[in-house]
Structures are given as C-alpha cells and as structure tokens.
Image (cartoon, rainbow, N blue to C red; front, side, top):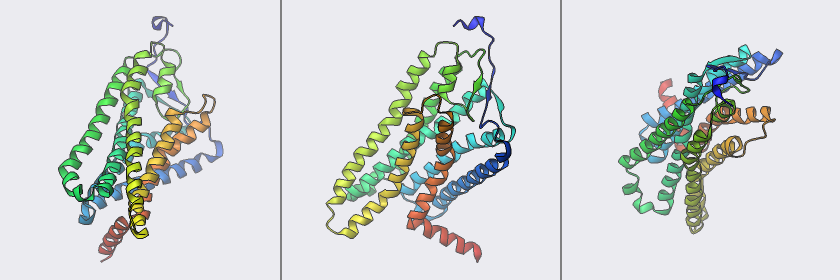
Length: 310
C-alpha cells in the first residue's frame, strides 16, 4: 500500500472497555481502589527501605527498585484507563502513544533485569555466603541497578525512534485501553520490517535472557539448599527465596501470555483481562507478597506505626 495515496493519521482512537452501561461507576471505583492501593503499597516499600537501617541490604535495595518500576509502570497507564472508563473512548496523538509506550517499556525492561539481579543476590547469599560481603557491596549494587535502568532507557528509546518513523493512514482505531507495539504495527501503512527486526533483536533477548539466568541460578540454589543437613536450615533458606520466585512466576507468566504467547486476535476481552492483570493487579500483588511473607518488613511497619502513635 502506497502511503502517499492515503490520508495521514495524526491521532488514534482508543476504544477502552467499550460501553459499560450501568456498571461504569462500579468498574471505575474498583480500578481506582486497586490503583491507589498499589501506589500506597509500593511507595510504602520504597520509604521503609529508605528510612529503616535494618533494611539496608542488597535484597531490600533491589526490592525498592522493583517497587519503583511498578509505580512508574502503572501510573503511566491507569490514569488514562480511568478516563476511558468514564467517557467510553478517547483520542491520543501518535506522539503521545509512542511516549506512553516508552514510559511503559522502560520500567518493564528494568524490572526483568532487576529480577535477575535479585536472583543473583540470593545465589551469592546461599551458594557463596563467605564471599557475600565482598561481592554484594553497595557500589556493586548501584552498578547493577544503574545497568538495569540504563538498558531500559536505551533499548526503549531505540525502539520508539523506529516506531516514530512509521506512517499511519486511514485506520486509526485501537481496541484497547492503551498503546502497544502490535496494534501500531497493524495500523501502519508503511513497511514495519525494520521495527519488527529491531524489537526482536534488542528487546526479546533482554526479556528471555534474565529468565534463563534466574532459572539457572535457582537450580544452583536448590542444589545447595538440599545439601543443608538440618530441616530448619533448609526451610529458612527456602523462605528467603520463595517470595522472589512467586513474583518471577507471576511477572513472566502474565508477560508471556500477553507478548510471547498472545491470545488469538479475536480474543479481545481475554487480552484486556490479561493486560489488566499485568498493569493493575501485579503491581499490588508484588509488594503484598514481600510485606506479608517477610518478617523484616512486617517488623519495620510495626516499628514505624508505633512511633507515629507516640
């Protein structure tokens, strides 16, 4: 199709959830409550790690960065989602759509790498405990976190630069509540081969490689734990990894169901549901897992709540 013979599209129409009729206010209220709870939970983790000396360790430092990813990611999507629920649909310019993609992609990419960094921390703590203080220094932690964020910023910038060169004409409807790469590629009337290639070459390895690294490190971790003679020692070692494993399974499970093994094109409602799980529920689920299952964080919450009452 020759783009010169088509009318150029400068904005997209987001259909959101469609017409929700009588349940509009109910859905809006539910989404708003979950969003506020996710904001509070992740902000609480960040503040607790910052102000509590007993949480100044690599595991909690990475956890605070994970919560920062969740805050940035969900805040980039949910406010517009709430607006779409109320009005039924909305328009967004091509530039705004690509910007939303960028600010979604950066924390998502950083989170994949941070999960790998957390698994490395657990590997060193359990498999190389004598070397842990010299390996997981604060300087090393900063380097790892900086690398995670820089990779996210750099890779998403390259992808978005290629996306910005696409030409869109005639069709401008996105049957979703947010922008994503796949709908933009389908709507483009210019060649998308360069975008597809750069997305695969740059993004896919940084999504899959961290998962492979996590699996590899946990194989070593489990082998080491099984060699611990006492059941109490084994249970304590497993408990330090269980929360991280749950988050990895939840994150990669929803991520793969949306992007790696997406539903068929006619499963629009299923895709929306999976996206809601990824965008809204997971950011609330993750800090709750660490807060409810971690004694140090529970103690920190109790300590600061008691000091506020006095």
